[in-house]
Image (cartoon, rainbow, N blue to C red; front, side, top):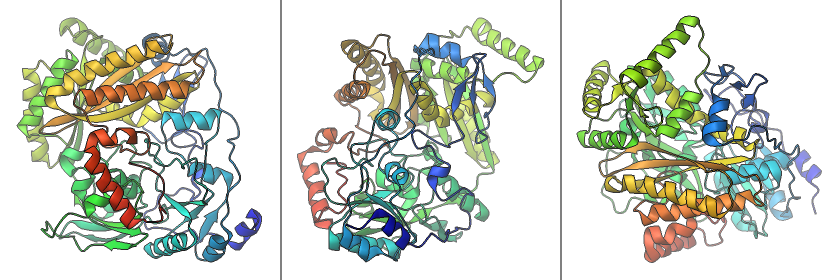
Length: 597
């Protein structure tokens, strides 16, 4: 057997590949990203002596500002017992790696960086579901990758796949690691050496065509860095999933992702013109950067949503748009969720769609209000009280019923003015009240905070997660009502002491339906296996979704978390088609992550 120390010494240290725009942070992700939770190492919610909650670090607008209302809301409305303490383990255990000596000899000197570091191996073996984070905090992952290879070019991807085929090594592809469907989990029974292919060094924009409004981009780039570099050319991609800070273009393609501003920029399938993919049977590379083609089935569709099962996506030609002249936040209060839903439906019919428009229910509205920072002056404090009195007493909005629509307008000054006029006219018909930019901006701030808050709650024996579905308009009320009922019933069956927290958000509108986000969580004190309990309740909720006409996913994907539902979603023939494609492209199951089917 080759000793790990010998292997490490044989690998040339990375030269520090620098893209023109790559964010100035260490290439070693463990230096800036948490090893047992979401986000930046210096950023977390902390409970202070005076009962205030503060977001540490300096990465967000509301960092290091005290939130005095959160503790009361969390205890009284959500049922989090902040007196409980459940600290995470200091060290995360991992089993020794399996080494394929012939493969390791073959790749020696071929790649800038190869790592057998235990922390790197663990980091590349999980996504960010609640279940995975719980295991990192209190247990261990059942199987982790054996080493990590950092590739920096398409040619290196081709070489690595060729050698993996020759020596029968399993490959798993890693972009930003933000997956929430267990897609990065290693199959427990896999006896071959598993190599994680880290694409984060492939982070360059190869060219930008301002005439055709297209760009060729390497797929390891994060959304944040992509927009930073495109801004130098006065253009944007516009794809903004909730994970935009950390997720990558390759991850978006492989999960068939959607962004919060899809109304203006499209979902990922609308943005991608062509992709380059290294598969075990060759490289798929199409010349398809045309407005439209009619040349047989669209092979992009085989790659979109393939979840790392057929190869490494290395490059993509994407559509770009001019930077918007105006970007404006707004918000609208409605008396209840039913009125808000009807407004969203009529807005979908109007075809006057802001870049983003999202409806949050009362629970989530109160969540956002609980994150309101302390007023900076007596005048600000006085004005907050006046606004609250005006809304609840004069306008007669019930604090326990009202909900909020948050809006982002983007475009030219004329476009935004036209959209504002039409949107607020429609809102008025449904007794909506214009609530201003601050509430709108706070609503989007909450989006970026959800995962940080989930990790905060886990310290106090409270587990929570979100999932999503796409559903036709006529089924939206039934889906929300029946999911709420089913989750409460399932929690009661399993001995959950307090009623669970359940909340809904309509996050996308379409002509034929909407996307519904579901947030739910509960205190697990006294439950022997909280992860198993939570997973069973989540599966029951998804059963309820499908029973009421919803899909298994709108944009998170399938992974291993939802693949038990795939046969019901696409049918026996659909499953067999996917299986045959996989077998033809990857006969040795080199990309054997067992996602989808």
